[in-house]
Amino acid sequence: MNAVITARGLRRIYGHGKDAFEAVKGIDLDVGEGEVFALLGTNGAGKTSTLDLLEGLAAPDSGDIEIFGLDPRRDRKKVRPQVGIMLQSGGLPADLTVSETLEMWRGTCTNPTTADDVLTRVDLTDRAHVRVGSLSGGEQRRVDLACALLGQPRLLFLDEPTTGLDPESRRGTWQLLADLKASGVTMVLTTHYLDEAEALADRIAIMHKGEIARHGTLREIVDEHPATIAFEHPGLRLPTLDGAQVDARSRVTVATHTLQDHLLALLDWAREHRVTLTGLEARAASLESVFLDIAGSPDGAGSSGIGDTPGTETADTTTTATPIGAAR
Ligand SMILES: Nc1ncnc2c1ncn2[C@@H]1O[C@H](COP(=O)(O)OP(=O)(O)OP(=O)(O)O)[C@@H](O)[C@H]1O
Image (cartoon, rainbow, N blue to C red):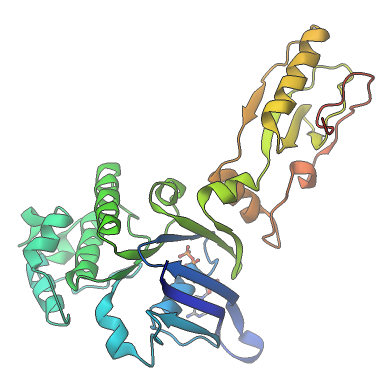
């Protein structure tokens, strides 16, 4: 796959001297042609700061960026016509109508489509003559997207494209982005909606405190993370449960990379001992559990198991029964 974006060692520092704050800490990124790449992370993780660098809106304090093999700042005249940008807040003039706004924006594009075309695609044709300032927040967001699409970009940067949209409009935007992907447009998007990343992205990077804590396909990210089994402590000696913790409310939680084997062994043990496991839950790892694990860990590394969870202690697993979680 041809590389559309290659970034190495990107750093972005705000302020100077003792007030200096390193918002992006030397990250590497690669995005291939036709890919949808989602940048996730907690508030302040550095997503927008990173997008600004890739878009050429700010210069990195160190590191290199290539967009279509060119420098987005030095070669701006060649790069910019191929790129559509939807900023986190559009900042469009409130007193222009939607069609006036789009016509104004068209004037800045090298190879624009028509205003009617983008209005149809973002489903705002009936709002064409309404002033931007009178639109709802979700409608304004769709005007921002329409502006980003006017230049028929090969590469689209979308900073939280569906924030403020109702569920139906969100689905409409997802369909539009899926259609753009099908036509070969490469996209980098940031979002706080994990289902959005799951639905749209070929690859995902989760940023935390200026670094990329995890990256890969959804499957790769989730497969690295343990599943969990939880139940109320039945009040008798449990079998050996690798990675088990019991909390102050006597709830036992087991982190496992072999959910089915662990669960089968636990249920065998329960049947053998005629125990009902109250509140039994078995959960495969999900993007949400990975995200929460990263967000909750001070260094962003996350935990490979819940053995690191604060406020828990190791379960009493002394027994003569079959060890659960031992190598089988
Ligand atoms: N101009 C600035 N001056 C100083 N600090 C800044 C500036 N812009 C951003 N920051 C800081 O850099 C960090 C990263 O901000 P950034 O906007 O990139 O995060 P983000 O991941 O996009 O967050 P969010 O999800 O809330 O939009 C934050 O701590 C923010 O306060």
